[in-house]
Amino acid sequence: MYNTLITDLENGILTITINRPDKLNALNKTVIEELSNAIDEVINNPEIRSAIITGAGPKAFVAGADITEFLTLDAAGGKALAQKGQDMVFTKIENAPKPIVAAVNGFALGGGCELAMACHFRLASENAKFGQPEVNLGLIPGYGGTQRLVHLIGKGKAMELLMSAHMIDANEAKQLGLVNYVTTSETLLDHTKKILEIINSKAPLAVAACIKSVNAVFDETKNGYQTEIDAFGECFVTEDMKEGTTAFLEKRKAEFKGK
Ligand code: COA
Image (cartoon, rainbow, N blue to C red):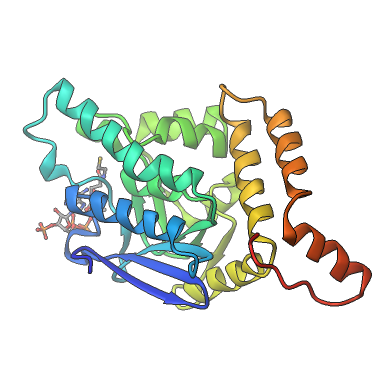
């Protein structure tokens, strides 16, 4: 179905593996287009409750945008590349109403670090390395890196990493709040799936409302508190809210339907 992705649906979790290991899973035009389609699939297929994005091979999550595609671009071309990527993939992941989590299994550089940051949260294996090395190429991040890195680790450290191209390892990424857990390479996917299985057992519309409300913190066009108030109110007319509260009072496990 995809040329550059492997997808696997199990227990409502779609694992999306970017599969160009000989190029360290660099994001070329095809990967961006296929990722866009895969995210649409996550959003639209009711059998999919959540998703994991990871990279093929032992070495890389994603080592960045594909540098070979940069050489012929002018200012308008560069701008279009960034705009298209943000619209088709990065912003779409961030605003997806189902959890999308990065399982970072190696280098997450440039667009790879940005892809991980666009996800709702991140786990990393011990060999993971994060960085925004674009200044080495005379560039800056174009897929939201200057924004999301500040959101996740704060202005001072983000400034340092962006301007120095310095790479950090998984443990430093955890100390900075860039990843939630550091695991072995062998346990990375299982650990990620365990967390998603817990989330998948909760009320889907409430989970979606968490994503929407948290994202409103970072959206200057929205009042986050008002977004929360509205989303809280909307929960009251869902079947799942009736089921969740009734199940609690009846001392039984709730059966959520996402309605
Ligand atoms: N775009 C295109 N190709 C890339 C790539 C990228 N971002 N990152 C790695 N590759 C390719 C290499 O060109 C090489 O291809 P080849 O075998 O045809 O020569 C292959 O992937 C393996 O990479 P290599 O550099 O040989 O591996 P390494 O272990 O020596 O180094 C890195 C690993 C990640 C340090 C190094 O590949 C690197 O610095 N990559 C670019 C990172 C970057 O600047 N990303 C931001 C882009 S905006």
